[in-house]
Length: 320
Image (tube, rainbow, N blue to C red; front, side, top):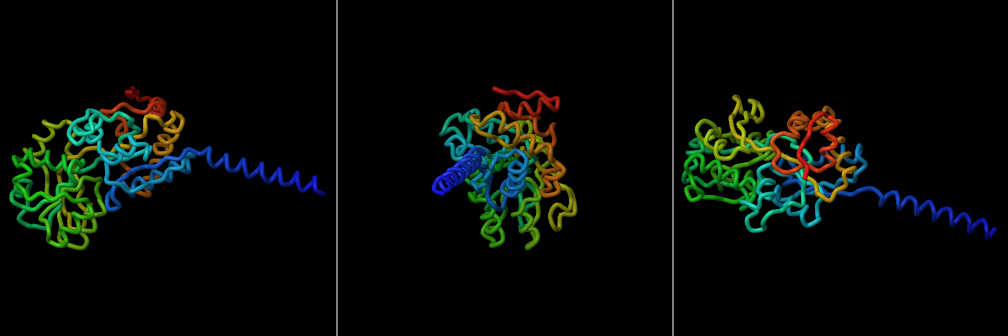
């Protein structure tokens, strides 16, 4: 009897050990996104579920301060995945603008471009009809050194304005929305894929609207900064928006630690791009997923795992 009990105990311990090994054998990754009022967080949550279910990678999505924080988080080893603006990742790769102090960061690689991130200028002040009308107004232009901040400065510059020509406020999406509702600011720059929750809530609960960034301002901006392109936000995107609104856009991009395994990144990429229709049903941004959009206009080399997937689709991308 003692021998049988001892044997049974050995079997139980062996099974438990195997189960523990199976759990710890699963790759775990943390994905930095953005604030809970922005598109990164919600969309990242959708993508993570397809990664978990189809790639066998345990992806934990966390809210962050956005692009720069996500790049720094990957560099520090806190995150392995991140959603970033294409212009901000270029700054990191080159060690310019928001990364002048830190210097070049090259610990990440591109997985894929995801969707257009529109530069949205929102206001409830009926006197603001163009970027030029921001002169003398209280305007939220994002956190200092953030992607939104540099987008806002670029737009102001193209309109012949400087940061000193406005009463600059440095706020997050959610704080900007609250400040607009409370009458503490006159306008805010929000850079995210429309419809953006913070703007949707504003337009639903108040008389907020988008100001176009078009004409000579858009032309000069695109000529000076080639990572911008013209973009139309379709009528009906927000409550009360009866016409298309022309603006400019950068691209939301998924990046990964350069140390991630080729096999894991291949499976992550496949999990997203083999499930575009299903993802689109859960988040409208999924409609912008395509091999062409994923691989075009990227200034940072791709991870070999992503490159392997795109090669199977007939597209060769740059790797380092």
